[in-house]
Length: 201
Length: 393
Image (cartoon, rainbow over all chains, first blue to last red; front, side):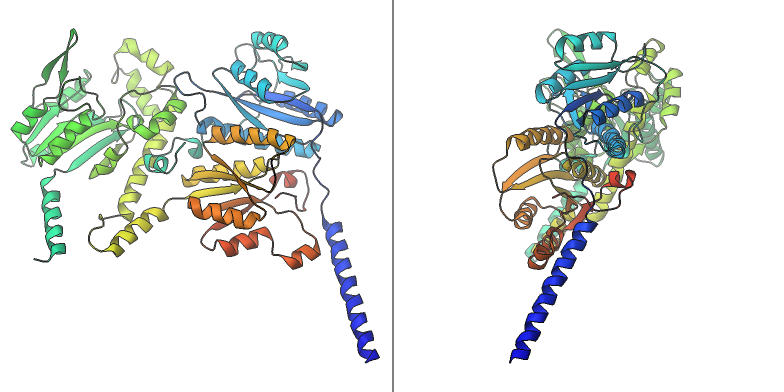
């Protein structure tokens, strides 16, 4: 009887040890977490065809130095003849590809990202909407080279007047832009009528 | 005669009586829809059929006018609207003439007030019902449900639209395909618009990007029509089983995706992947957050962002209260007719919890055996050189 009890206790002890070992192994295997969202938030507004790599790197450097979260905001324009809350599949396709590219770059730097898409009748309107919706401490943006798309001198002056917080404007220069994989992919096209029949917006 | 046979015979007579309908679909003005319609009309006339032109809009294009030569033209009727005199298709004259085949250009046209119907495609219905075959033309941006999206792509809104069902009622849809470069060449050669309008057209609608997008959507539209006609070859008549099979077949080609999200930035990756999949499959996307508590402040902020993102993407954000994520998600999936579920990698769990309850994906698979499940990988970890798992619910 005593022997049986000893065997049982031994088995129980073995089970506990095995469980503890598994647990420890699991904890050891668990990867280090991604950076937890920083307290500060750095807004990084950009538009299709005007995502400056230099400005993105500057925003990432700042975010890393301040342990802040990078908030890349894709500014989408809605034509006047469409309702402002209309879905934007074409621009969304571009925005999501660019946001993915930013997220990959940011993760390599160890910086948390909280991406957004903001709509507006104009880029300025979209920016105004962003200010209404988002908390932020700083804005980093690249001024456009004359004649190219991006934030022109007027936009920058408008931002200085209207945005709270610190604004970092990078002056135009030789720069590489990050392009989405395809400017207009099949998936970002209008759906066919049968596809649309299944989709109610 | 048995009742079923009688119904079959009746509908077969009806089908015989109705004219055949062929639509020439194009991606934009100038691809040659009217020309091709006239060409086929001429071939039918040469084959001995009684062919008339019910309405022609040649836009002063010499090639089109030349192609119409020899075919009988039903004169337009003059309609007075306010102080203007408009020229419209003469429906009563066509019905009275009763040809075998009638060529009617621009089916999306809006008629002047006071005529038999508001739109030309409705006039065409009358012609078909009279047993006359019809050839007609339309551009893809005139289809009602594509109108908004084409407007977003091209920045130009077309006011004259037709219900999508019109394309579905056609016996044949012929796509007039032309590369954007060729179409622009035609435009520059003055074959589409007079020279004084060419520059404006090039600056606005006729860009390579716009035309490429419209071309792709036209090709897809026709491919879908063909697929639809292949899957459902005949209308269900008779037995309940036939009707069930038809409904199941129609349902089988519809996809609906459900992405499980939480109000955290991490969920954006799942949303992105889910939206892309939805676009490829042509399905609707639902985003679902299952919560056992009221949203906290930081969650509320993220929830607002998620709601705005869903609106931009055309997805639906659903918030359900429940302690059991799997059971709640399964219920929602059944209610919404979900065919795919996407979720992030589940949170790593302790050994004890793993012993007590299967992981969320396994529970979903057992609760929804007919639904595909996709765990969205975190590619950013690969970019960062990480190889482990990532927490996400």
